[in-house]
Length: 448
Ligand SMILES: *Cc1c(COP(=O)(O)O)cnc(C)c1O
Figure 1 (cartoon, rainbow, N blue to C red):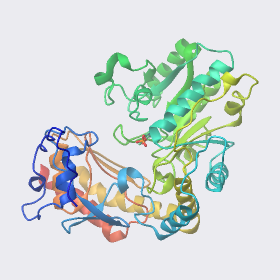
Figure 2: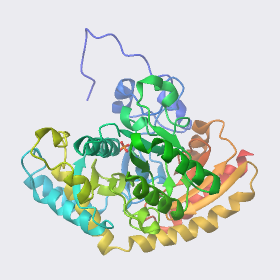
Figure 3: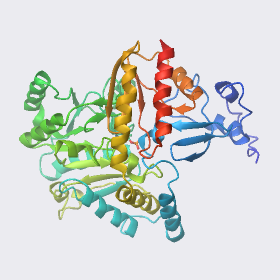
Figure 4: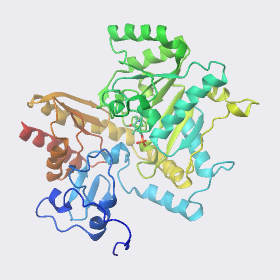
């Protein structure tokens, strides 16, 4: 099929580099859809002038991605940490196909349906404590925005309108929208680009030792009167650089929230659904947040869906004869029936297949296999938790170039900041996992 003719439109700018250049010289000419479409695509987090041309994916299977030129890459990232059951799981396909035949989508305003309500009651049953009221959205950032709106309106509804600020943490990441950027790490995040446009919240170091803990409680003494909630990613700050903290830190946060009357929001968008070795990371600290956010692996990496789940005391603050006390939010594709069917199928797989045992096996392999990277020059730290393996370097001068070296090894690994990391599918075959860890060792050995 040829591109539609648009005689009156100016010609699109040529891509910065020809696609053939980015892949090895042996690669054949790219397909017509690639050549015609690439000049019209704006890629995420990319300096479009200099970024290597994107790969052309054709199909996927379990932990592998096939490219249009016939190459096959082992995926170390599981589609941005989402594809926990591997790609193309037949049970998910069957559930989506069945749902597609009866009702792909219907608006959720004033109407509900089986896939969404089944999912809500299942999430309630599997989440710790009494997290029992589910608000569905379609992306992680929006789920966090909803959590922030809940926390702010909770104060408005209960007569404390001055308490609208969040306490968030250095190294944190909660999304790319304007409100969520304001609770991301101010240096690693995009605060410097957006400056005064962002709302001002309080960003502190996590209370990890005696000094940071006493500073943390001092901060609360000074600011609790203007704060509504504490927000953090439990156990692992993902996009901030796969930074780990101990369960004790989460217990400190819970204790602080209770002492100062704050809501505790745990953003489990990355950590939820087994990634850290337990179904939810907060289980390892034996605490229950007041609000939790979920997305990424919620549908097993197949469709866009997110959820913000609140405990009864949060929800009850919105029950009123005053119409202004209702939560005013409602995405068009909220609780999309296909996505909810997908999430239900994903939860089935956690029940019928040994996912957490697979995570434990991955943890054991990553611990052993990545350890040998520790003595390589330029390596600062090696750390593993659940199905997350991290090799932190002193610095990565050129992440794009490093990624190209991994592609040459037939693995899909995306270094960022100063880390090379793996977050594979829990179903990854042992051989593919070895391919990933061997590639990291080989590439980092050759680097320095
Ligand atoms: C990915 C992520 C988000 C944002 O989710 P999107 O679906 O990309 O908007 C928010 N919080 C955490 C912890 C994440 O890892």
